[in-house]
Image (cartoon, rainbow, N blue to C red; front, side):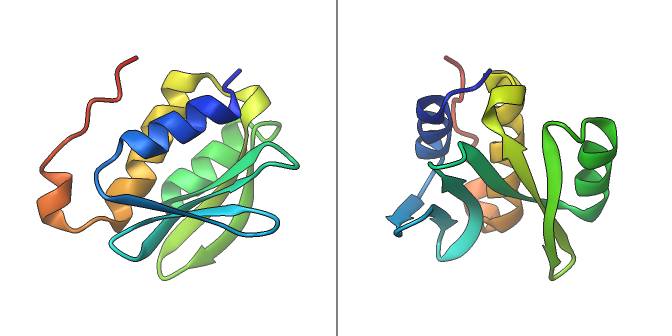
Length: 114
């Protein structure tokens, strides 16, 4: 089970991540482009993915992932932190970041190792 602090550490380890807090959720951006959300009240995370990855995740483990929305050729998934391990979460967060970051940032792969 991944914890909220693990998610925040993973997201914070990525290059040029900006976190903004709202009343109900936090938004995570890289160079102004949103790649993730965190809802403390439900301990869920919303992450940008490819449409095919969104469909695969939801089909494979609907108790952990649910479709959030699609936009601009991307599919967003809600991730229930209680149902996912930190290493898998790190992969999904990195992918969400990578889909939003400019190429020069993607070339600098952060160290997400614990």
